Amino acid sequence: MLDRLKQLEQATAGLEPSPRQRAEITAQAVDYADGFLNRLPQMNTFVADSGFSIMLEEPFSDEPGSFTELLAILETGITAEGINPASGGHMGYIPGGGIYPSALGDYLADVTNCYSGVSFASPGGVRIEQLLVRWMNGLVGYPEEAGGDLTSGGSVANLTAIIAARETKGVRARDIENSCVYMTVDAHHCLDKSLRAAGLAECRLRRVPMDDRFRMDATALERLIIEDKNSGLRPWLIIASAGTTDTGAVDPLGAISRLAEVHDLWLHVDAAYGGFFLLCEEGRQVLHDLDKAHSIVLDPHKGMFLPYGSGAVLVRNVEWLAKSQSYQADYMQDARKDDGHYSPADLSLELTRPFRGLRFWLPLKLFGVAPFRAALSEKICLARYFYTELDKLPGWELGPYPELSVVTYRFVPAHGDADDFNQRLVAAVQADGRVFISSTLIDGSFYLRLAVLHFRTHLAQVDYLLALLQRLVSEIG
Ligand SMILES: *Cc1c(COP(=O)(O)O)cnc(C)c1O
Figure 1 (cartoon, rainbow, N blue to C red):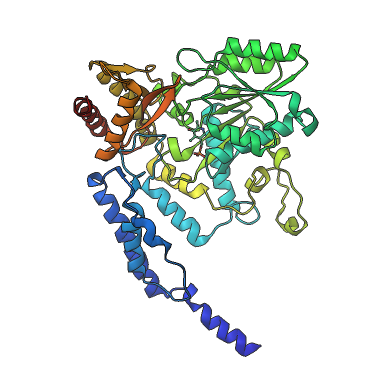
Figure 2: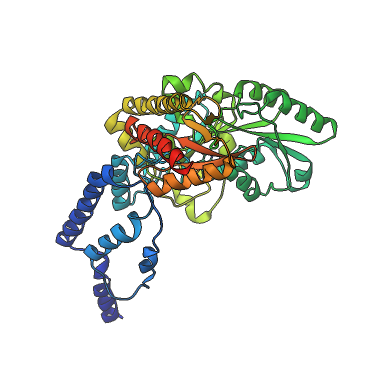
């Protein structure tokens, strides 16, 4: 047995590079990252799939590989094609970010493999995550007793909130068919998924009409709630948006929250895209009454420019989240510590999780909040600039003036089908590749979308897009 153990120990040596090997591969990785960031301004934002990534299909073997070759594969097989999410030319969907110190935060979190799920395992790691949640709670105007959790993204954050709503409102299987949920068609599709995942797919889903700016119509909402109550049904949940993905619309949360209170419904606000605009003056003029919501979702990998992998769920009373996620596991008994504070694992669907706090805390501490405020103001101003400039040109039809940083627009050709024309336009922008935009359907018509949220998007990229659109319109026309 002892011989076998010695042999096996030797065979595991490959898992722990020597200090010299470590320094070597780390330097190569840093070189790669530096090269990528230095070349970024010259790189395209979109490159169509050439089929090259097929080489990644090579199966794993028992033999070790070469780090240099693996980095080369990363360059040619992974980062060279598709959408370049690190590029400031990314103005499609909702762009993410990728601020550099977050990468260092992930690096250090992973090397130390700090476990921030329970306070006993990492008092400091848990404290950082609690601090971030308190900071976000302050931003939305929540009181002391509020709580929340850092998640992998907005989808899981929304699911967590819906489960908290279900448990707090005591919606049980036998009630579901008579329970009504209210949201507009522009609520993010992950909320449909959340309802399904939370066992609420059989609820009666009421699609609340929107006004001409794609905001939930509070009068229509009230009418629906009263109708449902009069029919003996049980209205229990309103899902509103503070910045829809499609058009950037902010639902009238003041009026909606009054209805939620009068009729005793849970109000959930999906602010995954829009919430962090509260950090800047232009955003505060648009975002009101978030503090009236029972739960809110924010996406730091959008509005705080973090790399993908950071969402957040906030609840006005931490007990709602704690009760909906409470668990008992005998093997965890040493880790429970009753100091009056909940650890992240008490408030989360996850037990073992990455130390997400570090990638968020490090840039906030290192840069301070000021450049984030400035960048968020800049995004709103860029969207408004784009709107105003496009409006000066003939043939363009624009959606609502942007309250946040999404603009919907399309070109209406003198003859021919507008939908077809705009589909060709978006394909031509993507083929050009310098910048990336996406499209959506509004009342069944094909519209282009501009979504400015990348911290590297500045005037130059928006001007490039404006010039490109004009050139392409005359080429296609
Ligand atoms: C992005 C987004 C989501 C989904 O969040 P993920 O982080 O992509 O999971 C939900 N709601 C809105 C409004 C969003 O913009």
